[in-house]
Image (tube, rainbow, N blue to C red; front, side, top):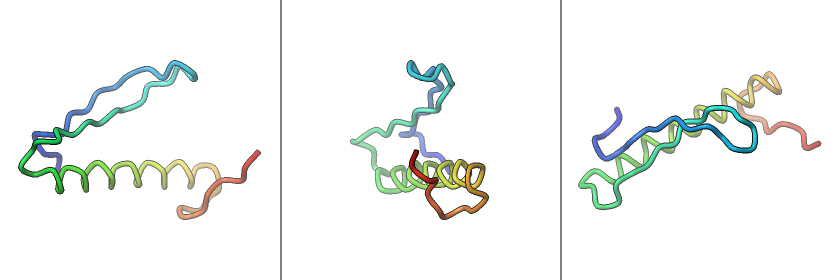
Length: 65
C-alpha cells in the first residue's frame, strides 16, 4: 500500500520519448522504511515484467548487445 509520503508522477523520458513513472519518498516521513520497501518492490516488479517480455523468463537479465 502506498504511503502518504510516496508521490508518483508520470513524466516523459527525454531520450526515448516514453512516459515513465517517477516515485519520490519524503525522507522525513514517519513511515520511511515502509515507503522505501513499497517503492523498491514496485521497481522490482516492473523490472521482472520487462525481463519477461524480453527473455520469456522473469529472473534472467536480457543479453547485452
